[in-house]
Amino acid sequence: MKKAALHNLGCKVNAYETEAMQQLLEEAGYEIVSFVQEADVYVINTCSVTNMADRKSRQMVHRARRQNPNAIVIAAGCYVQTAPKDLIKDGMADIILGNNKKKNLISVLEEYQRNIRLPAEPEESPSSREAESDLENKQKSQKPVIDYEDLNHGKKEYEQLSLTKTAEHTRAFIKIQDGCSQFCSYCIIPYARGRVRSRQPEDVLSEIRSLAEAGYKEVVLTGIHLSSYGIDFEGDSTGLLQLIENVHRIEGIRRIRLGSLEPGIITEEFASALAGMEKICPHFHLSLQSGCDTVLRRMNRRYDTAEYAGRCEILRRFFLHPAITTDVIVGFPGETEEEFAQTEQFLEQMHFYEMHIFKYSKREGTKAARMEAQVLEPVKAARSARLIALGERMSIKYRDEMTGRTGEALLEEPLVYEEKLYYTGYTKEYVKIAVECQSDRSNAFVRGKIIGCLTHDIYLMVEI
Image (tube, rainbow, N blue to C red; front, top):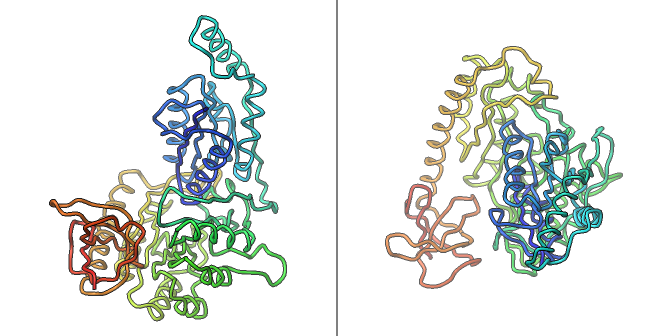
């Protein structure tokens, strides 16, 4: 049996697609092994959201080539789409598989194998060593296969990938949308992923029903620009809220989480409808990026801080103690000390549960890369450190406020701490808890009261 190894970089959408490609390989008869092991085929699903992501993508392709020079190395994903030539230099990758082409993995791989006429299970003998040498020479002479599309932002169909199982045993991420039409001035993703494309509702619901039958109890709806789900459908078709309502009706699914949302989708009607669905987790990731209006305008974000604060207030009216998380970019071109101070002050006022802080990364091909007054790296590092510290304080405060509250947790995995057996899991707000157990409680729901910290980031729950 041939062996295949996969490595994912980047977002939850990439992770979903990597698992879908793994499933395609398994169905084609491959044994899946760890990426650190020797394999016949390596698949690296690349990311291009930052310069660091580009570098890590190249490093992983190089690593695969070093581990087995005779392996077929496949580079897929966003970095492939933005800089395919970087990944075929010096024989790095044999196959370049762009976004919206990952479903072609097996057919492209088989065609490549036919062209180099791979030998089947050679025996250890002088002739087999000659065969391996011949194979290596043929691979070196074989031109890389490039299966990707130049994205000109025209309309494209949603790529049909699906899962029957996931790496996590209790929570399943479901990709329902691809692409983005926002063109924020710092972001390469619309060029890497193309325009908004939504998955047909029945395909989404069919996949979730299958996962529910397989025992999954929580789903996370995710996409590149989740709030745009359905806008590309013709006529009066399903939008995000209608899809969520349909998912809510699926038996066996006990929880529904939402991926990153744009603030504009949070209206009173939207929040009221979600609050009326008991399966919805009050855990909302609202993308912010800056707490300063002048920076938001330079970023081409389509809201200001007053509107953003209003959207958070709506959520807090309809949900008791919702967990609101966000992303923030520091050191955007031209960000002054005063603008940064405004951002810091705004963040303190918003009382987030968690913040993901990113230093601005210059992306060639974006408007922001051409802006003047690029912020120096030491300045970005100092500002990032301040906001990370602020985020940690706010996260502790939010979790401490959960102490004394009752709620439900979905248990996931065991933890031995101070010679006691616990099972850890998450509340609907995504606060990590531990419950003392005497037996396997994986994928079980418990109702209990949070009584305090067990460790720095795990809170102790007692069943009631």
